[in-house]
Image 1: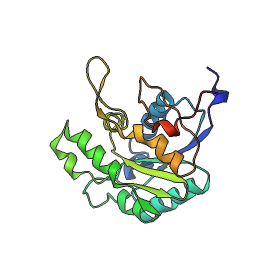
Image 2 (image 1 turned 90 degrees about the horizontal axis):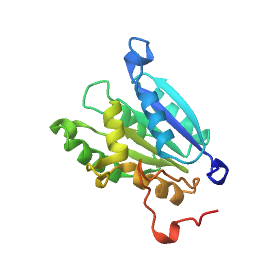
Image 3 (image 1 turned 180 degrees about the horizontal axis):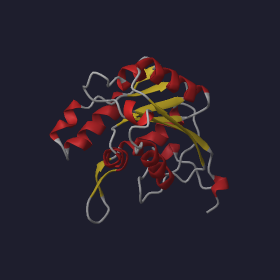
Image 4 (image 1 turned 30 degrees about the vertical axis):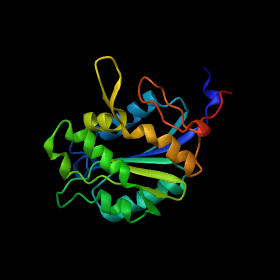
Length: 198
C-alpha cells in the first residue's frame, strides 16, 4: 500500500537526561521512540528529535517550540520519577491548555504488572493547541510496554497500551488522521470516526 494515501505527521521526540545530554552515556530514549513509532504507524513521519537536560524551563521551552513547529504529537522520555532533578511533569503541565489524566493512569497500570515501583512514576499527558504531549517512562522496554500494552502468547491484547487512544485524540483536536499497524498497536475509534479507505 502506498504511503501517499496516509496523512503525513510530524512528531516531536524528546529525551530528557542530564547525563545523556552531556555525553556521559549514549541516549537510548530517542532511538527507542523513533523505532517504535516507525513500526506502529502507517503514516509518513517527520521526526523532530531533541536531547536536553533535566531543566524545567528548558523542557517547557522545547515543548512549546515543537508544538509551534507543527508537531501533532510530542513524546518525552525521562525525568518523571520522584528524584530532585525529575521535573518533566511540572514542565509539561506548565505549558498545558488541558490535562489528560487517563494517559498517566493507564501507564502506571501497565507498569504495575511488572514492578511495584510503578506507583512512583509521575507521567502526565496534556494538550497544547492542536498537539498532544505525553510523558513516557525512561527505559526503552517500559516505553514499548506502555505504548503497545500487554499481549498474550497468541498476540491478543490483555491490557491496552496508551497509543491505541492517541490517533482518535489527535482527530478530536484537529490533527492528521493517524493509522496504525494492527499487529503492533490497533488504534481505536468509534465507527463514526473511521475514515473510509481511499
